[in-house]
Structure formats: C-alpha cells, structure tokens
Amino acid sequence: MTASVSFDLPDSFFVVFAVFFSLCCCLWVISGAGDDDAAMFPSRERGDSALRSGLVISGTTLSAVTLMALVGLVALTGYDGMMLSLGVVVGVVLLALVFAEPLRRTGGYTVGDALAHRLPGRSVRVALGLATLFVCLPFLVLQLAAIGSLSAFVLGLTSSAAKSTCILVIGCLVVSLAVSGGVVGTARVQLVKVVVLVVVLAAAAALVLDRFAWNPDRLLGAASSGSALGEAFLGPGNQYGDGPMAVANRFGQFLTLALAMCCLPHTTMRVLAAPGGRGTRRAMRWAVGQMLVVSALLLVVGLGAAAVIGGPALGKADPTGGMSLLLIAAEMDTRGLLVSAVFSVVFLTALATVADVMLAAATSVVRDLSPRRPQAGVAPLPRQERHARWAAALVGAVTIAVSVPAADWNLLVLSTLAMTLAASTVAPVLTYAVLWRGFTARGALWALYGAGLLTFALLAVSPLVSGSPAAILPGEDFHWTGLVSPGLVTIPAGFLFGWLGSVRDRGATVPVADGSPARR
Image (tube, rainbow, N blue to C red):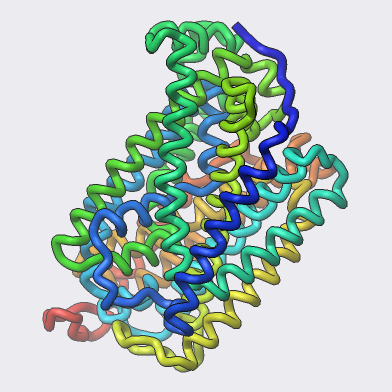
C-alpha cells in the first residue's frame, strides 16, 4: 500500500507556525532577560526539579537532524535504522549509568572544569577546549544547513540562492536568541519542545496505528511490502550492503553514535547543570524514560512512512529519507494541522539545538581556552559572562559563513566528523577519568590529539570526501578505504592512546579533589 508523494502547504500552515514560534521566542527572551548576564551560565541556586532537568537533558540529545534522519532510515532501511535508533537510547543509558553523577559531582560548566582537579594543567584544558570546538562547529553547520534546506523545501524554493537566504535568516535569528536568552532561556525552550514533541509524535503514531487497526504485525508487513525490500526489510544490510566492510560500517556507526551521545558538549553542559546528589539520578531516569518513548514513536512513524508512502517514493523525494517525517505527516492528516505542528517542532528543535551547541562552544572558549584560566567550580565573573556573549556571536558568525556553501554538500560527512570526534576523543578521556585512577594528563593529551588527528585522516581518504557521486569532491578520487564510519578504528585508538600515554608517564603524583594521589 503506497501513496503518491506530494507536499502542498495547507492554508493554516503559516498561521500555526507563526503563533507557535512567536510564543516560544517570547518565552526564550523573557526567561533569559530576567537574569541579565548570568543567563549565559546555568545557576546552581535555581533548584530545578529532577523531572524538569531530565526532560531538558533528553531534549538536548534530540536534534532536528536526529529526528528526521531516524524516521527516514527506518523507512528506507528497516532493521539498520531501528538499530541506530537503539544506539541513541544506549548512549543516554550510558550517560546515566557511567558519566552523569561523576560529572555533576565535580561541578563546573565544561568538561574541562569537571576534570580540572583530576587532570591538572593548562595543556589538558586547552586540548579539551579544542576538542569541544572541533565537535561543535561541524555539528552547528550540519544543523543550520539542514534546517535551512528543509525550510526552503517547505516553501517550495529550490534555488541555491533561496537556500542561502534561509540559512542566513535562520542563522541570524538563532544567534540573536542565543545571545539574548542564554543557557537559561534555551533550557525553557528545550522543555517546551520536549513536551510538544511527544504530543505531536504521539498523534502521528496514533494515526499510523489506527490506519492498520492498531495491529503491529499488519504495520510491519505493510512496511516490508511498501519498502520494496520484502523480508530483507527486517534484516541487516540494507544501508551498507553485505560483506566485511559493510559489517564494519554498521558496527562502527552504532558504536560511534552510542558513545558520542554520552559526551556531546551541549549534553554534558546540561548534565553539569542538573540537581546534585540523588537529583542527578532521578533526572537521568526521566531522561532515559523520555528517550525510550520518543524512540518508540519515531519507530512507528518511520514504519508508517514505509507502509503508507513506500520506500521508492520516499527515496525519490529525498534519497537520504530526511523528508519522510514531513511527508508522512502530510499524508496522514489532509487538513494540514499535523504537518504544520511537525514542521514547527522540527524548526524549534533545530533552533534550540543550534543555540545549545553555540552556547557550549562559547562557554568552552571562555572557560577552557581563555588565557586566564578560571578555577573549577568558581562562579563566572561578569567579565566572563560578557566574553561568553561575544564568543557565542563569533561562533554563530563562523557557523553561518560555513553553512551557506555547506548546504550543497553531503551533510553525512559533517555528522560523521562531529560524532566520531566526540566518541574517539572526549569519550575515552571521560571514561578513563571516571573509572581508572592511573589515568594521567599525558594519557589525556595522547587520546585527544592522537585520536583526533586519526579521525581527520581516515575521513579524508573515505568515500565521503572523494570517489563517489555523493562525496564532497565527486570529481576527485583519492580515497583508499571503504570505511564510511571510521569510529570502529578511531574509538579503540583513542582508548589505546590514553592507556599508552598514562603507562609511559612516570611523573610525580598530585592530589585530586578527594585528597588521594593522582598521577600527572
């Protein structure tokens, strides 16, 4: 059972979107303005509830690209897309079980702050700050280019100039919102976004299930048939094919996604602002529960897209499947209210994500890369808060400048770069710092720089950059590996570099926060 792909804006679209967006912008600005400059840093005295903090943390992990990509991958690849959805959940579970409490207990505003007592020395802090920037910048460009292209598609604009205009307008808007609302205002919008997202996705999933008489077996059967893959839809290999390299890409992508979700800078920023003690555990339980609900709803919507519209039609509309969420929403509600609500939520999700990542990058610039290193756990001075605003504006300007030409790239390379860098550099350092008392500053430096350089090198010679029609340089061919997701190599390398650097470091010991010795 398939339907023809069409996307006509309903009469109510702009009204619904304008009202929704205006209300959220008012909330954003008012929330931040009440705290003046302090809105750029989360306050420890706010006493946010565990429920609220948990929903904000889960909202931070759900970017607009994640929402659209997961629905599209489930619709086009079946089992492979379901496994990636599981990878997101596994990442949040790892964050809750391993990293959340130790991070929050150490305090601070960045990972550099949190590890300052454990790994003293400016060199480690600078390396963590650079790693944060190299993770944040491609992630920012990815989100901004994607929402700009999506907005142009919804408006029926196909030219490159139209895409560039959308990116420029949205970029200026989100920079102004980030600078005026700050961390506090963005948290309010994340909270609203999560609640509305669950309601909208629940409505879309209910319409899908109702069409198939609330019978999951019928839905799976129709999705397998509509995907044109048959029984293979529910088996592995639809995204990368068969063979050893395909298995390596699938496993590497899952591993990268799970570990990256634990340590993305904007996620750790929200964890560091969570309630202390038992409040952190309760907040993470809410975050995991909400992520499970959203993942289940996305799974149902993705299967519905394959069953109702069909894989071939979805692939024709967008080979990456990124438009599947909007297309199934338009198909399930001909009145147009659902697609208006879906686009509003996706747009707001993109703005909140870009603002969050921008603020995480700016905070790292001020706290980790500043010539005058602030003490961990010490409240920021007004001067640091003003510098954070300027840093956020600068990061936003760079993001806009890069996003305009990047709109015509294969955005998968930006996603792969950001996720692989986070999983290969920050994740090993956090893991060792939390679980291994013998971890040293030299081990951290080896892991951060060694795995980071290896990630850039493997991506440069991968099919994402050259040697394929979808590459950044389709006319060139200097790739020598078919490894699209290098995390299978770079993540173990990051852990290996961290271990080697630590065991070869025979320096003196220094006290850590609890008074016990730790090695330099």
